[in-house]
Length: 460
Image (spheres, one colour):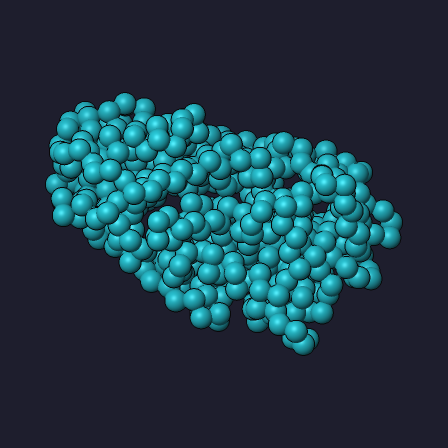
């Protein structure tokens, strides 16, 4: 049995519950549908893409499973997503790259020493977090994290090159957390989320996230390639009008599309969303974070002493690029470059080959030799994807966790919402999306806990 971290049963649902339509087959939507199916409720999922998973998307890159969206189960100890993996027999292994992390400074054209890498990581994961409370007092409630980084590094008295690398590394850490520039992240609400135990990098599910998605989707009525264009509420039910002209009718609907989709006004709602709901959608941030995955014949980077890398760029305002060697996790001779918000133009405004050329240029510089020809390349494009509109949610200056919590409240007793953006406890995390789905299933089923697992005939 699973809960959403709370023992209460959320209310706000009109009776009776007959048929539930779920919009979106990401982890939130699949969790709702799975829970409801185990609870004996007729449920159909409509998904605009031709696949399930949403922003969890595992591809096969010439034999290597690569997650082009979410990849880690962060803070896995006590995490319901990790518990689900155990339940359905998906093995997990540590995905922490820090013990083998190396660094290269493109500005100075040299490899960083082990001492320098260790000092950089200490600053990212210990020193700045420990200084945050003081910086909040000093800079005030509407300050951005960019202001905090500047004040923190200025006060550190580091030499110019070290100060540059510190700013670049700290920007990257924040851009990884927020999927946006540090100027757009509230200092007051940085690191506000509840944490489970275990490493931040946590665990990697065997075969990628698709292993968990397939288990969650087993036995569900999921209709891919069906885009919800308009959701119409009536006194006695709901109708989901689809872009292909079809209509799905039910007693209730759970909308789990990403915040980036809601920001562009999709789907339409009739009657329209209340003004305070629209204002919360506008206040919350939904940023960009892309990946470039390249497979080679052999993991030549390991022989060069660079199993995983932090690459400090030349431009002073840039953010460190992280490179994760998938061979360290038995996923083949593949490198995944994490391209944060300040550098996504190199990916979103480029062809696949241009994006690969950019990252391989930095790699060649760090190794001191040209890269061999890749055998396969994949580039994400979440920022240009109409069904995501970006990566995940953050809280800009002027917004608050209450905005996300408001987006999780039902409307009119029949219109419900799920997704990582509909709760503040684990915003931006896949497990936060999952627990939002559990929350909505609890609401509909009037239960404090729900069942999850593959759905088979006769499961009730």
